[in-house]
Image (cartoon, rainbow, N blue to C red):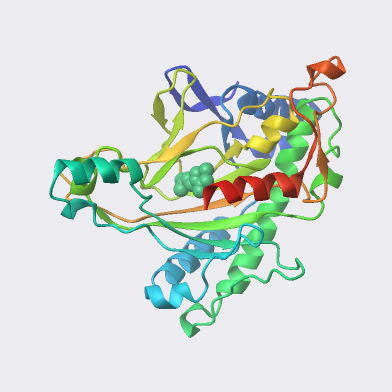
Amino acid sequence: MEQAAVQGDGLLIPLIDFDKFLSGSPSEKLSAARAILAGFQTAGFIYLKNTPIPPSSLADAFAASAALFALPLPQKLQYAWSTPAANRGYSAPGREKVSLLLSAADVAQVRLAAPDLKESFEIGREDEPGLPNHWPTEPSLASFRATMTAFIAQCNALQREVMRAIAVGMGLGASFFDEYISTGDNTMRLLHYPAVSAEVFAVNPGQVRAGEHSDYGSVTLLFQDQRGGLQVRSPNGRFIDATPMEGTVVVNAGDLLARWSNDTIKSTIHRVVEPPRGGEEEVYPPRYSIAYFCNPNFDQFIEALPGTYEKEEDKKYPGIKSGEYLVQRLEATY
Ligand SMILES: O=C(O)CCC(=O)C(=O)O
Ligand SMILES: [Fe+2]
């Protein structure tokens, strides 16, 4: 029996020992795979412990991310995110003037449009023709590219194993997804939620660090620091804290995997809000996270997986090319 990482209001996110899947006995492998699949089918989220990602790689990636975001804005803007098809580079925070608002009408207006209090930097597949990554050239970031390249390779290897676990759980054979994900059409997103005055949230109850959303692709590996603020929506519609647990990776299923599984897997809404209140903080410290968004190869045609429907008419969605689906979704957001 695995433990719960998060439990409340009908949401149960399991904590799974991934080493049991990777190096356990055949029966341990199978039960870990089934627990992983069950977590995606019920919560849409799991926490994994004992993954092969070395803590030192993660620490290096967070340090490189912090060094990047510490650059002055004009320097970061040299690396600006350009188009949904490219999906690479830097996105600046929304204007953070919320606490200066004077009238209730102004507050109401901003609540409607309250921009996320975050900045991000996206890194795509390195060898994609015509779409170079925006590697920083500052001397203070001399090791950024090597650090991220190594970390991305480790994340890609981990997601392949997660997909194998899903395949085993579904009874499809461990290598079922391998050919679908051979290219590594994935995106690493570095996230920085700057320090923010507690007043910003007090003045505007609609203000969040990242608005509620589901992810688009197959699975997302999410590495969060210890600040807290990530919340996952329960089946009853309440947001439940997905509290950080040292040494774990949060993994969630995205919309394309839900569609691929004929909605037997859930892509669950989540968001990032102010950290849970401890005392009388006036300023919430910055929060950093790294999300590794995975997709089937962009040229793969995605339609209901074997075993997720009985008759043709039970298929809920027409097939679609992975890359087309992603670009459609990105176009709607930016
Ligand atoms: O920062 C986080 O913990 C969550 C980020 C997230 O959900 C996203 O970027 O899709
Ligand atoms: Fe997300």
